[in-house]
Length: 332
Image 1 (cartoon, rainbow, N blue to C red):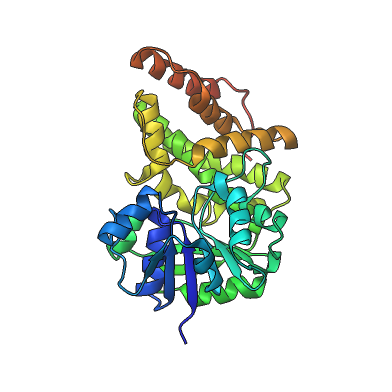
Image 2 (cartoon, rainbow, N blue to C red):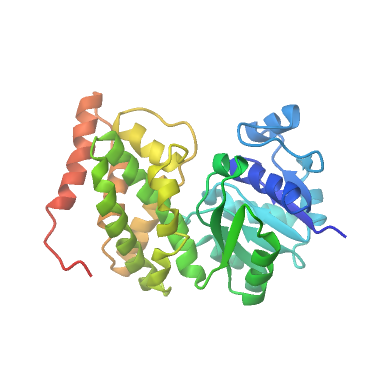
């Protein structure tokens, strides 16, 4: 009997996951989206979006109760800042005590500084039934047959091993995560570094992306350690291993957001790194951890923009220059 999986959220990652699990793994997949949502409407009307064509076996629905009730595994792929309210909606719509929840999303809640798994735990979901699925890869590459490696992590060792072994294919090689704190913080923080990379690209100093990778990973490692995780997680697939797709790829929303921002242009798609920068800045202040790159990204994202594009570019680049005026330190 085929395993029943429901994917909540039918944006780019949600639609890809539904496609992947149905076509590559032969799962019985339902894909849910709110009826008024643009992504859902496009899939409903055309059966495809700019990323994937949904397999005919996938059931597309806007009925949240039905979608959750029938599933053994519920995969959530929505904007991270909306997760707290969304899990309450899920609980109201259907019983969840017997469900496994997999978070295929990256972020830190700004208001509380909570990791996404902590939000589910706070909502009464059993920690032993929660996993996170993160790591490098762009949908455009996956659907073109270009493979990559990803990570599944959980407090429950048996669960993460079972999911990774079950979901692996010739398209995605999974690793078992060692540290859910580091995995979640690292996955969220790489989007902040992606914005920084875009600012460097837009400012014409792309060669600084080498130092950004080195010092960015070190910065995130300090935060992970302060939060009780293993600082080595910053150098794994969830963070440093995801830098190529986030700091260099033309498909990276966060990198493109940073590039367009420094040029005074507006990026219309979701860049999770913006709110993650705000959440990380708050966590750094609470834990007494220096996060100079994160602080610079926060300043650029939340500063008032001057009238002219050239003035704005100078302001952004002056914030980068301030990083060079910091006291000299030992590298490690």
